[in-house]
Image (tube, rainbow, N blue to C red; front, side):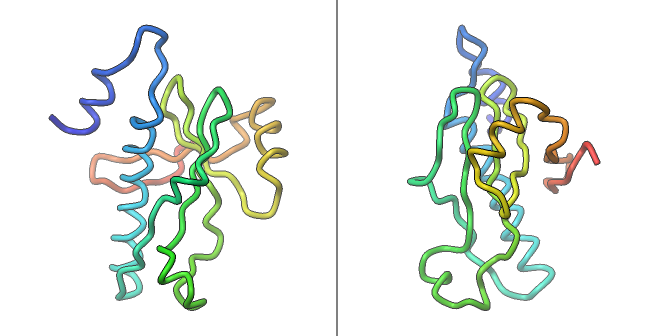
Length: 133
């Protein structure tokens, strides 16, 4: 069974997704980033989710991602502008947060107007892109 079927078949009685289901979606995004960088720049960056930094805000999780710890020692391999991703518990919708503002401030802005944040979705070919530009 594909991971998407697994996710959509596992809604619990409160219509909320689990952290593990959100991690599956985030891992697909990270896999896409690895493939994209490898194709465009000729090296595999080893992008990972920093799971120990994941934050639960009640309505969703914030996932942090970057190259693995070993590659992070080489400043040429660090990804610039890779803001954390927020994934909603109720919908598994994914939103890009920024790097130039405190996460707590962005969470408050998100609660007021989530449509002002880029929503990222996977297309039928496994590419991720903003759907609300």
